[in-house]
Image 1 (tube, rainbow, N blue to C red):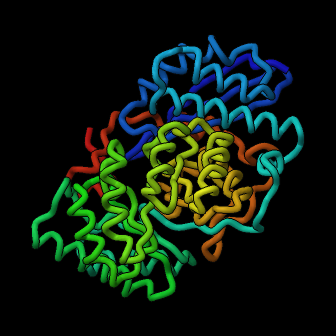
Image 2: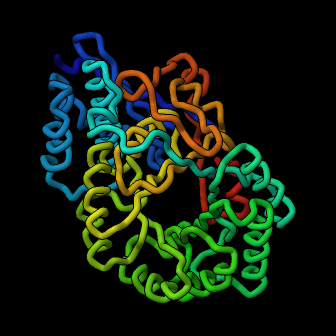
Length: 386
């Protein structure tokens, strides 16, 4: 079996483009990859235009480590987000092909399931006015749908620090969400790498009474010593730190593990080189007794891939999911992902990733020229600017 064709397909929504990658073999099998690329769509498409003829075409799709290893190593230049995203899209599609050829779900080829269902948390649910009453009502809708966990960034367009009035407003928003969901639902506080260490620690102390299950990316991702400073400062509060969506290689995680600067890692399969790399980093995290909560802001293929990996991880915590509340129609681009029921995904069914690409639907939603900016007022409504 040989790979004979690789085709990118870009679908647009009001705040994000989702790029699918269709990989075809001479045996008639097709695999699909996907990534939500933030502001660098053309860069990844350009990388694939060069890399696919060099490393992918005419290769045996079963040789996943060979293909992705060459993509990682043989261009010589230091690898980063653009290349690891392209590699991930190819790698997902190859696993999809291998699963179809074997007649098995991918998770069974990754060691088999260690759980019967996969806990989910909601994101993208707070596309409302940034007031306590609106956040309260929106959070109530999440738990009414059965979720037992939800994540949100209450910090507006904050960067490095917040003034006193804005800090009080943030506390009021989090208090409203906790009141809406009750004491038994997990709330995850997203910081999006906004703050300097002192402000992050101050906000952790302010929010501690509301029992957040983690603080996510409290400082920018480039400086892990600063993250360690926050971790040490908030350790007495008993609030875990989660991070990792903007770490793109196994080697970047080395310093995080050595410093023990976080409690939960969040590799994004679509930017971290794919399923097998995520499986590798999760095993490494397990040696530090760290949990894994895969980052996932994509559509159906990235969600399916995340579920296949999550099913196999002994140290898995919870799976992120946007599309019950933000652009649910994107799931029609590749039907087959099990729905969230009472806060859990069922295990994926069918061979491969268990999804079927709908190219007509993608064509009906062409790419948009948008810029989604997390440091802009009202970004949380997810209505991006041109």
